[in-house]
Amino acid sequence: MAAETGADATAGHEGGDLKRSIGLGQLAAIGIGSTVGTGIFFVLSEATPEAGPAVVLSFVIAAVTAGLTALCYAELASAVPVSGSSYSYAYATLGEAAAMGVAACLILEYLVSSAAVAVGWSEYLNALLDATVGVRFPDALSGAPGAGGAFNLPAVILVVLCTALLVRGVSESATVNAVMVVIKLAVLLLFVGIAFTAFNADNFAQFAPLGVSGVGAAAGTVFFSFIGLDAVSTAGEEVRDPRRTLPRALMLALVVVTVIYLLVAVSAVGAQPWQEFEGQEAGLAAIMGEVTGAAWPGIVVAAGAVISIFSVTLVTMYAQSRILFSMSRDGMLPPLLSRVNPRTLTPVPTTLIVGVAVAVLAGLIPLDVLADLVSVGTLVAFAVVSAGVIILRRTAPDLPRGFRVPGYPVTPVLSIAACIYLIVGLQWITLIVFVLWLGAALVFWSFYGRRHSRLAVPAGEEAS
Image (cartoon, rainbow, N blue to C red):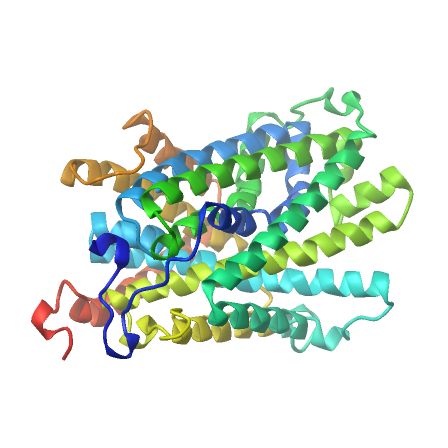
């Protein structure tokens, strides 16, 4: 079936099949690995001063938004089980122009966030090396030119390692990621256990000191911690029994991530007054050190962050390469990007190009200013997926679906509304830059993709 196998293999494996080698556990780990990353290690220091102890509710709001969208992803993933995530779903339900717009959003989400988390890995790696062996990379080689350095070498090293793993094969990459997920979840659960020993219910007495607006603002901040669940759907053509496995993996990843985040938030606020979170660096490590009075907790958290960020970078680069692969196979990008290696059955040219692009960004550009762009790109893509469920129900009601969104059509409508609610809270300059980026992507589509796409080129002329 075309929807499940992708394009037919051709000579040279250009536009060929991807290898189905990922099971439920590995796929759920991809979702968890791409979500439980830098966000939870930093976000409390930023969000708690905005909402106070009610930051716990902010996590719930963000989780509900992600959960509503995950249900929509699950239905589309079971109906259209191909690589490409929300790009492929938009292509199937809304057409080329909308698909190119969504692809622009996903590039913001994955390419920019891959580089951003690689920069964060550099900082934690230096902290870990300094605390354990007393050495660190020199400042000139630990930051971008705009961040007090000349070149971020550790970040580039991370990108090279991830690229090498992805070129070797997706099964090996998924296995490595699964091991990393277990380790970082263990670190976070260790934090929860230690923090709860110092739990003080009085820290929740003034629950929402900044009101409803504070809770909403913090929800937009903590939403960064949920970005990545859609990475599960980018593996549609490399999953065994995708119509059943994709929805189950999405739901499993969401449940695990939400439970972990709520445990971390409740235990952290219970162990430390909310006023002390503001400006606190490496907040989880600081709380552990305060509770235990020892230095080793900081080392454990730094090591956990190094492992966590490695797995996030691996998964986001994997997701980006599969999206570009799908776009190329549809004719929206040059055919080089859909060539598959005959031995590993992985899109090596695409993976290498993504690796080079991420390495350049991570090594030379400080990316903290692009965080809101990552968020708006993700939220727009989420909203399009939710709209896609409604449209596909109308245009293809008899299409086999391994999963159906419960509470249809209320659930996808609520998902769209939740995404719009979070988008409205972003800065206006972010929205302007996003619109310009989206416009540039549509210009590219009008001059290249529109003329070379599968819909534009008759089937008999594709090989020419």
